[in-house]
Image (cartoon, rainbow, N blue to C red; front, top):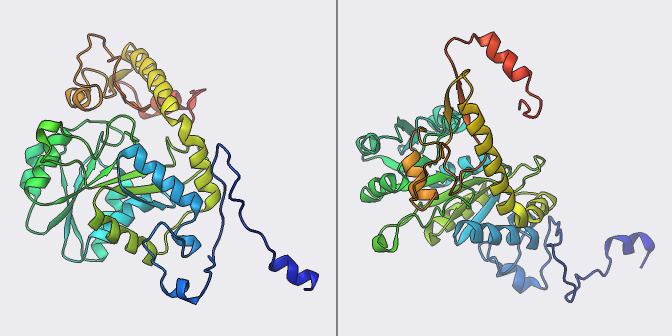
Length: 354
């Protein structure tokens, strides 16, 4: 064999007796089969084997398994960003003539996706007030196929009564999808929302997670995931995922895998720091309102307490128990002009504008 040929057709075989704390980075486009029969009998949906790099390697499959453990799911797919994960759910589960319902405080890019892209494909949308369950009940119609949920809402952080919203959707036979980036599998279990006494009810049908945030933790990886406990939805999601050519790089998957062991500690440490900042902000006259689910006056605080703090009451101004991520919203006093607010933001030293 010529040297230049040997460079290509090397005899490398992954060692079977090598173990280390972290998952290896398995990068591939083509995946080799031992013979023609194995090639012909490949199963694109079978994760006990490998068919093509885009559809999964040991590295990406391991990340999917760990995300299922984190959120209490059975199936997962990885996507290039959290927004791509939101789009994937809509593209996989909806068709022309269907309608989706979106919280009026939802992540703005999801609204834009519905208003522009989904509308072009004949998929209709309505907005509902997640803080008023009857608003959702009234909005559900014969063409409603999917209801999006956010807990809490983006930016303004209202915390809805998730069990009540799920009961309404399930009574109408409508699918539910939750943007679980805030909860991240730490604050609450999206697929196990109801107590055992209500075992006939289920959690959400689909959970979407921007792994860019807490799982990655370093601010240098873009990735999203979609998880579910339902075998039928998993098949639909996986086939759509493959047909649309979605996939993630093994290096990025390994970075998230490396960060996952510390995610719980990071989440809780950032949560504690955020509550300290929230308590300080409550004492500042420039703020008309501080929005944070652990603050008793924040919209939906009681729902947060029930879902994320085991229903425990707390006499503190900022609840000291449960889990509440590391986000807060600030509403400036009306006496401040836009230029004064800009000046405040420009003078921040530790908090970056991004």
